[in-house]
Image 1 (cartoon, rainbow, N blue to C red):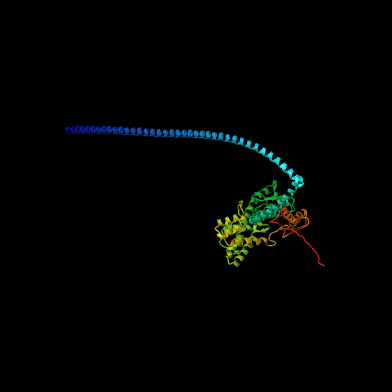
Image 2 (tube, one colour; image 1 turned 30 degrees about the vertical axis):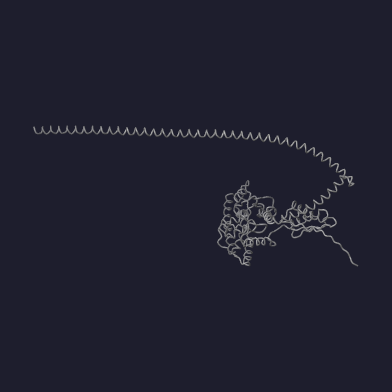
Length: 510
């Protein structure tokens, strides 16, 4: 029992010692943690103070910089103001100086004018004395002598003027012939009314006028939908059994014509059906254009064309130039170029290629304000055609300088195809009317006996009376007739006026 008590006491003592040790150790650890926290707090405090100082320094430097910049701007503004003030003062001084100089100059001019007036009066007095003396010597009055002198001067001036006019005209013909041809070629289609109508209007025939009402639709909905889908103006008027499709794009007119044909045949005409049929026809036309381009290239033995170029060739089918189908014209030109190149020992395939593509600039999707030769040349460059072909396209209307032998061949063959009899249509009535007007215009001048329009209206022969018109008057008459024809008439190319004055002396030996 005593032993047990002793053991318990020992255990209690040991437990107390252990608890004391643990408590002391915890207290020491607590003190270390507190000390570490205080140290860390001091470090954080110092760090925050340093950051605050750095921020303050940064803000202060930024403020100083802004102040300096503002001061610099103010200084620059003051400097500019001073400079402007100096310039104004200098200009004011210069202006005052010029005003003084002008005053001095005005005074000098006034004095000179007074002196001139005095001299003028003296000269007039001497001239009167001389005229009186001359009248006494010549036996003619001053008015009679003046009239004689004026007539002599007029005749001399007229002769010199005619000679100068002839010289100037010959020089102008030599320098401006190429430019005039180019301008005329580009202008004919724009000023020819018949050709413009032919190239912008398509007639769609219908069986009866009842169809017109169905095409128009209720309150015009069908025709508005058709115009919006095709981009073509549809004219429904009193023309019997016909509807006019008007538009400058021949492909759009063809799409509108085929769409109308399908709609009229089908009988279902309403806006939704119109959009469906137009989309279908557009796809068909596009496929046909590509097929025509491929077939044309194959027929002519031309390979390696860009797909976009083949499409443009197909579009030529729907374009006409001066009443001549553009695709047919291009095929003719290509064949002629091939034959001519073969005869000259040149590359026939290359010549045919250039001949086929020479008018490609007339059918682009977008039409910039440039000559078609330049547009075609740029298209050929874009689609990597050979330099000879590019130059031939651009030079066939002398837009650029020729640098190879293919170019003049294309130019000549283009002219041959266009000049073929029957290739380009012309209204006979207007042609005859133009010739008659030209002859009547020349007959209206005094001294003209007969007039003849020859060479398809490109030359006018004027026969005058030798007793009524002199040689000098004949030169003046040809110039006057040419000027009047140029001002009052519309004609292709140029008109040559030839005035014929003949003097015959006839005698008989008996």
